[in-house]
Image 1 (spheres, rainbow, N blue to C red):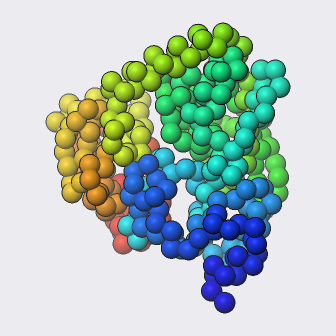
Image 2 (image 1 turned 180 degrees about the vertical axis):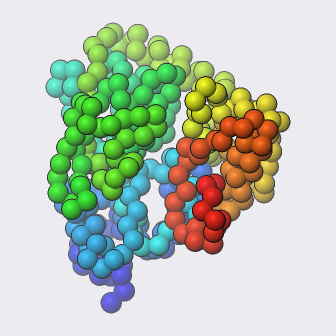
Length: 313
C-alpha cells in the first residue's frame, strides 16, 4: 500500500485536506517551491497527533508550516509529510480583554476582528500575512511592536506530542525568535491580552499603517516579506540600498526596486535562483560594510545539493 492510501485509512475524515505530490508554490507567498510528498491540513489536535505519531514511528520526515508566508521551499520540494496549520484550525473566542484563537487563524484576520470588537494591540499585525502560530514562533513584528507585547499563553504539542502550554515570559521571546523556533513544538492555539479602545480609532490606526505599507513595500509582487533580519544598529534595507543592490536580479528573483529589504518574484522565479540572490546580497553587504545579514526567511525542503559548506542563503 502506498503512503497516501495508508494515511487516508489513518485519517478517513481528511478528504481533500490530505494530498500527495502537492506543489508548494501554491502554498507559499513567494509562489515558489516544488512538491511535498504528502501535504496535510489538520482540523484538530488529535489529527496532528495521529499524523505526527505515524511519522515518528516510521522515521518519516515531518515539516510543520503555517500558511507559507516566511519561507522559501526548494525546487526539489519537501520530502516526507508537511503539516500545514491553517484555516481548519482557525477560530476566535473572546472573554473581556482576553482573546483565544486557533494557531491557523490569519494574523490580519485576527487584527481586523480585534479592531471591530474594540480591542487594541494588534494594529501592527494588520499587514502581516502569516498565521497566529507562525507569528508567535518568530515573534513577528512591525512598526516597533511585536507579538511578545500581547501574549498571555500558548498551547502546543511538545516533542512527545503531549499537550502543554507556556505563559508570558516562558515564551522566551527575542527579536524574531521564541522557544518554539528553538525546539520542535507544534503551536495549536494561544491567548492574547488586548486593550479596550474605540473601534473607529483602532480601525483608523490600521488604515494609516496599511497606507504606509502600500506606499513603501512591494505588496503587488510575491515575496516572503522582509528578506533579512535587522542587524544591531543598522537597517538591512538601507545597507542593501547603499550597496547599490536595488533591482539586482538573478533569473526572476529580484531585490525590490521599491524596498531593498524585500526579495520579490517578478515572474517565474525558481528557488535556486532566489537563494542565490540571498547569498549574493549577503556577500556584497558583508564585503562592503562588514555587516553580515541573517535571513529572516527560512529555507525549507530538499536543499541537499545546495551549498555543501553549510553557508546560509
